[in-house]
Image (cartoon, rainbow, N blue to C red; front, side):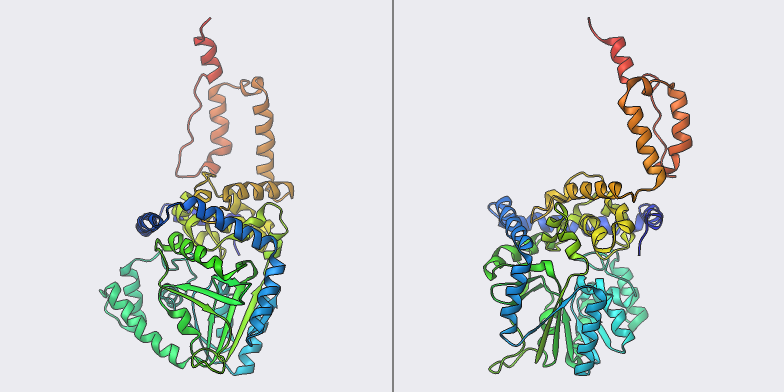
Length: 458
């Protein structure tokens, strides 16, 4: 769990790591070029974003209705729906499934919700072998790390670092190319797919009117995870619901374009439940765990609830100047960047994570790039206001704000001290806040009002 001191310390360290920043700049630069091309498929992108935002906002506001509809449709085909209030309850349900079916080997596709649960660590403690099958997730699992980015889990690593990792783990050539590493992983994971007795996935969307799980991916590992004859467990946040299957022709391209710059992701699948009598592929048992884990806390907020419309494309992370400097691990949370700074204080306690909402320049880039029109920079301000009103700000911050308010309200207070005196006080009290690697700008000998009086025309 993060706190403000650790956050600032980590930011101070990572923001001045030139190698780290170079990797982020390179990878996000490639993303920016791809997204520019992907957006060219739209004749009116702004209209598409308006429509998507409206559909998601309506779904969030009628969440209970659509979730109940989804459950009714999904269970008619033999699927089972489990409602989990928090991570502890979700893990308890997963453990019961594992014990009931004697599961020993799990293949898992990329899922941020499973990261909320710290599922891999939990399964390891239960003597279950769990293998990530997304290439980026597989890399960070081998490295003993968490995903760095919502869409690109290994964004913080370059090819040389990944090749060295595979050399240390498997003896692969240190100079192995990206294609050679990919081929090696493909062959190794094929054996995992064949021997697994359970597949665990997330869901990009769950569809209310048809009771379907919608998966979108580029590697085919998600659909491969559930195509065996064993058990398929889906773990999904309650906010991922869409009203109709007809909405996917809008959301799948938007997610692909803003997530990776593609017109459409390579594999797009709808899963309606376990294998039926006339079907040859698919799991014999299928469970969907609908996870709250603090989402109803966000839903209860009149302003911030719109953040539940997020489709996890990662566009706000890639556009954020703060994220580009401090990266993903500094946040100390599952969800990072602007969307993480908005929702994590309500998912895990504003008393612990209110500082994230202050880690923003409020430039509005996150709002600009969001494909579902979430006003992220305004929600950050709402979080700041709530943190102040709830008394979660440190005493020196409150004192500083009171002094600033007093001084700024009256010109005579601002002009009470000379420029030299002001510079001395700023250096004494504010230098540490400004950062040890930066110098405070000096206050001019004459302020604007004095210069204006001297030079104004009669």
